[in-house]
Structure formats: C-alpha cells, structure tokens
Image (cartoon, rainbow, N blue to C red):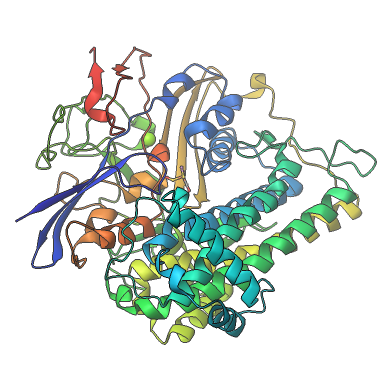
Length: 578
Ligand code: NFE
Ligand code: MG
C-alpha cells in the first residue's frame, strides 16, 4: 500500500510528522510523530515550588497562562492552600480570554485555509459577497466597497507571487467546496481577526502586565493588587477597560466567528461523518464558581456513548513509552506522573530517510492513557462531557448549532464536530467574560479586595514532603501538572498536556492515539495534495511544543542538538551522549 509522509505539518505550533497508508482513495492506517524534543522540565528539580509556574509557562508561547495555572494549582493542592474569591475570578477571566483569543486565531489563521480557497476569492463578485455577508450577520464591515478593497489587496499578493501567509497551500484542490463569495468573505475575516486578536488581548496586559506569559500568577492567589485609589492596581478604570475589551471580543465572536462557522459548515457536512477518532473523551472541567462548581463539567466518555459520564480518578492516568523514544524498565505498562520518568533514547532513522519504522518507536510524544484508554481532549471533549452532563448553556448552544446545520448529536464525533465545538465554547466564554468582570466589580464595591492567601506562603509552615496535582482546561484540552515536594524543594515534576493525549502514538496494546485514529477512513482525492489529512489533524489544533518536554531526575546532560539542520524536522539530528 502506498505510504505518504507529511513533515512538517504547517499551521501548528512545533513540528509534527504524519505518515499515512492510503488505499483506494482513503487512509487505511496512520502514525503521528513529534519530531521535536525539548528540555524545560529539567531545570525544575531542586527549585522552589513557588517559582515553578514562571518556568513551566515557557513550555509554550501559544497556550500562554495555562501551564502557569496548572503549576500554581499543583503546589496549592500539595500544600492544601485555598485561594481567595477574587483570585478565582481573576484566574477565570484570564483563562477565558486566553480561550477566546486562541480559538479565533485557530479558526481563521490555522484552520480556515483548509476549507477556504484563497485563490478562488479572486473571482468573487464584491456585490454578491456583500449580500452574502449581510444575510448572515449584522457585522458592519460588509459593504461592496469593503469587499472590493479586500479583493484588490489579495490580488496584489497573488499577482506579485508573494502570497505571504497564504503561501504553501493546495489552492484549486477539488475538496474546496465554497463559492468564491464565501471564500472572499472568509479571507476578509482572516485579515480582520489578525487586528482583533491583537486588540482584545490587551486584557491580559491589564491583568498580567504582558502577553504572552503573564507575570501576575502566585501560589495562593494572584499578584494583581486591587486598590480603587491606585493607578498601579486594579481600579475602576481597569474594570471599565476590561468591559470594553470584552464587548469587542464578544461582538466579533457573535457576529463574525459563529456566523462564518454556520455559513461554511453546510458546504462540508460530509466532514460530520469523517475523523471521529478514538471515541473516548476526557475533560478535567474548568471555571469554578464561588462554591467550587465548574462551568464546564469534569468527566470522561467511552465509545461515543453520551448516556454515561464517568468520574475522573487521576490515579488511573499513566504515560507509556512502548512506541516513544524513551526507555522504561518495563515498557509493557505505563507510569503514573508522580512516578514519571523521562529517559530519552532516540532509535529512529538517521536522515535521509523515507519513512519511520512505525512498528517500533517513532515519536517524542509519550502515550498518556486513562485506565488504559486513549483519550481525546479539547473543545470537543469538553462540549461532549458538559452536554452529556446536562450543562444547560452547553446543551442549548450545541443544540442551536446542530439545529442550524440540520444534524443530530452523532455529527459531533467528527472533524467538523471538533471545529464546531471550538466555536461553541468560544461563544459561551465570550459571554462569561463580562459576567465574571461584573462579579469582580461587585466584590470590590462591597469592600473585598483580597487576592492572595498569605499564611501558607512561608515554606517553614510546609510538611516535610507533599504531593499535588494541578489541573486546568487549556484551549487544546485537559492539562495536568504533578509535583512532588520534599524539604521545600521540587523532587519530581511531570506535565501531561493536551497535545500529548491527542498526538499520542500507539501503546503497548497497539491502541492508536487520537490523531492516528481520526485519520483512518479519511478520503484522499489526490495523494500528492493531502489536504484532507490536514483538515482532520488541524481540527485538533496541535501544539507540539506543549506536548514534548523532559525531566531528567539526575540532572545529567542529555543531548546535543546539531544546529546545521538542513530541515526543520529536528529529531533525527539529535545525538545522545548517554
Ligand atoms: Ni502549546 Fe497547550 C494548549 C497546553 S497543548 S498549546 O492549549 O497545555 O498541548
Ligand atoms: Mg510530560
């Protein structure tokens, strides 16, 4: 059977290689390989647990904030610290703003061009595009003149041969189905979203001094002071600016992102039957209210069965390495993150090579499992777990979208379902931003300006040894950090992140990971232009930087990296000393 390798898959963070076996026009087998290797966790050992967030946040520059939150929560769990109400609200606001920005960027800048043919937009009629845009949304940038301007700008790119962000795509591929006017409208929104995301993320600068990598996290709460009489603290002006930014955020989500999804999806309803994947879905849940109830539910589903939500027991989470470039003493089973080991051992081919030896080890991703099940995590997992749990906002919004598309809940188990779920949760969180900011303002008005629990800050108050689990929902899914503290220092630290779950390779039992499983059955019109593979892989929003990291318990020097790489597929160039 012919095999095909796509390396690197672009429009993602980091380096991902996908190998597929194609027969009779569809994918028969698939392998996901992270070709990138990093070493951030290495420097955590021996450090003060209170500063781990500042280092772990650097796992990734795309999902900023999430590794900081997971880290402070892991320490808080270990030391039994309860954070003040205002800190909870500030965390919800920062995290939800991260989701809203990240999901819009994903839809327009990382995923839309799998569905939108930019070159076709050049044959659009601006008047008809205006009519289309006005028929689906009250968004004001919709005149004929406006769309003519966008078309002219695009023509300059294309005619000069300098496609910029629109280079390296399969323009004209038969799997593109949108009429030219829908393509032009989507290209206009692609460009608008670039400006929008830069503007609205100023909310992070207000609450965290900068973006990415906010600076106001703190074990025990937040380091953002609240003081109505200070210009250097959260005050009435800050609240007013946040509300204004969140209005801008919500308007774009409601009037551009959601209408675009609903306008584009009907042309691709066949993708509601493609890309279902492992069918098991895990969500840790997120966004606690003042009583600790989560806005998005926690739980897991098995075999696409929405009738039963199972409770999550983190003690049943393991990581396996039977197909990963690491060593365990016994590779027939996984290790819980508290006992986690990361002993890299690269055994892949040296370049140049055509294909990886996928019967053996073939990736830098470990294989996380929950009670030995591979799990999909991310927006679809969150929406399904909340939907199956009866969370009203989720049920209503999911049903609204399904109704508009004329499909049932079974359509969610697909590439299109994954992309729709991301939009649905963005709509919900864009609403909550305003609500949580008003909740914060009401607390401040009532005289509650507490943001940090200080009594357990002093390491002298800590037990000699403690372990903790910090979890959060990151934009790409369930994220956990596990910390083992001994004598006030970090003894062991492991992160099991969303893209590790989704980009997981096979395990010792031969069970495929979510990307791999989702690719099977994908139709391929032309193996030389595997657009369809990109659609399904991108629907997960891969981030390889997050998914690969390393901890060497002994602090040994582990590897040398050759910098004269002829390609950006780095792993075959790694040379190990030990
Ligand atoms: Ni680097 Fe991340 C998110 C985390 S993905 S993007 O969302 O954690 O694995
Ligand atoms: Mg890890």
